[in-house]
Length: 108
Image (tube, rainbow, N blue to C red; front, side, top):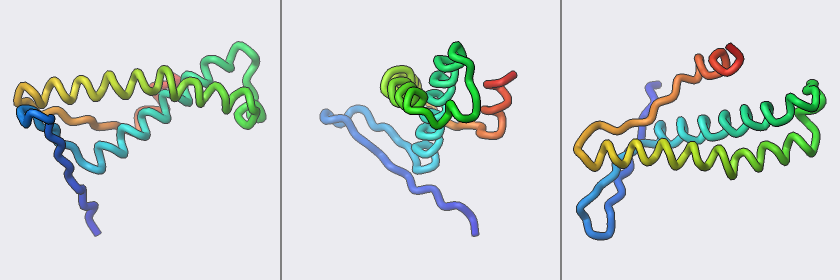
């Protein structure tokens, strides 16, 4: 069965700007936000000697939450700004992720 993408549109209060998105794009943004947050939490923890057990420590979970609220949120707003500017000037602004390359790029 093919995937059906639901589309969403949002208009500014004055009606001059409309932003279009889809559920796939929103899912891709969420995955990217989580990945960036996780990657920064790992980078912060590496100095302490990371092990498999450290992924389940309270310290690592706190670093993920801090990363999600700081770096992750900044990343999310940055990408949304690209999309809004592109669509405001009548260009196709779409956020796509390539999940298969994300892990290899982060460790490469």
